[in-house]
Length: 279
Image (cartoon, rainbow, N blue to C red; front, side, top):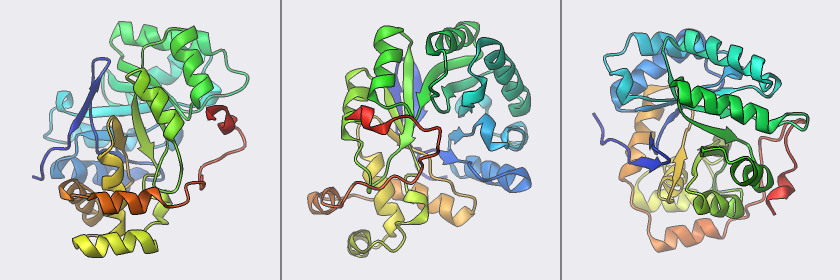
């Protein structure tokens, strides 16, 4: 088994920095991917109500030799289900599909202008008190909304999950997260496959005898308080991501990445929040 990824510990959370993202994987493919990842040493699995694959993830969890207590499991509630009663139903459904009595992290998947954030977070705090969720958090929350959740409402937000890779600047959001000891989980850490032949990353990769994707992933994992959840269905991709943990980037590599334009956001649905609130 490969070396165990470094954990992030904050707010009582213990979350491996490298996780397996499962967006767009369903059915047997998803089950096999999760089982394979756990066999290879992954201990952080990320899913969501909206992905439609919690049943497949649950199948993998039910048939792995890895103890449930050794696995960090994240799922998320969709923005249409943030009213307290709908949230309760969503949590019950997720636990049933995942075949577990608790999740390690339960997130609001996306904010929504019409949401009652205090009521939603109050319900999620109850889940934490009841042991249904070990920790709670949010996803796709810019600074203004995160500040509302943490400072105005006083919710124990452990994680903010958001798009983060070498082509987008999340400096201000990361700074706020760190100021509140909130972990950051980077989704689309490989920019949805766009980094495989990126010239700057290819140059760094050639120097180290690795792939551009491994360079991009290690750049994230080297950052304090940042986890990453690349999707990886194939055994080769899962192993390559684990192997990226052994890569040692140098100051020249980091300077090259820092100089890249960082204005490319690839996940921006119509219901997304005003990202400029992070400015």
